[in-house]
Image: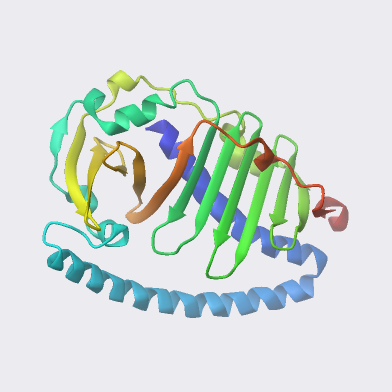
Amino acid sequence: QKLLSAITSIVLCGLMLTACGSNDAAETTDSAAADTTVAEETQAAEEETEATEEAAEETEAESEENAEAAGEGYADLEAFSAADVFAIAGEEVEASSSNVYGFYKNFENATDVYADMSYVGSGITVKMAATPGKIAMKTSDPASGTNMWIIITDTKMYMLDENQKAGYSYTVDEAIKEEYGSALDGVSYEGNLDEMGAVKTTTVEIGGESYTFEVVADNNAGYLFDADGTLAAMITSTDGTVAAFEVNAFTTEVPADVFEVPSDYSVIDADALAE
């Protein structure tokens, strides 16, 4: 479980870092403009929060209707993730016979990982790569049109805007090392897979297709596998907050160029500006 928990944590932190990174860069170049921007964004965020809450209530009602209409099935992944998925009754099986065991087995002794996931409901896509000494995260938000790219090495962090082909570089400080230090050392599975707890598994129908949903005992994550045994989605629960991710790719093969700043990008040294 440590591997997937670590990856999920990195992705979530990456989104937060991306969101505040663009504001930090603006504040470095023009504090007055940044203050205005922050105020506008705060007001917009409050309005968006109200709209999101209303939409969530409507979505919940629609999900319940969809579930009822589909009988034992769910209209789509969003409807499934809106249900109390961790309470779904399932057959308890030996871990070694589960899909999640096979998934973890692919990453045993691996230090490199690449994940491409989409947040269910928002359409935000996150691509995360980790190899010893380097982390890269790309986030794409179709609603706002933003495409942010973060690269972190042992010494430098880059905040890049893919639309503008521009960004800022920062010296990696203790706060960044504390947040991402373990990932910079490489993502590895440190447990014995044969000691994994029992797995509860059940078959669910989503969008007319059959999937296997598995939950590892004492783990706050559920795994949805398609008919071929490929991980299709992941659902996590942290402090009562449930998040669902559609998995587009999850592999030990990391694209080399994800850690390289393209030569046609304009990068400003933020540390020099702050002096």
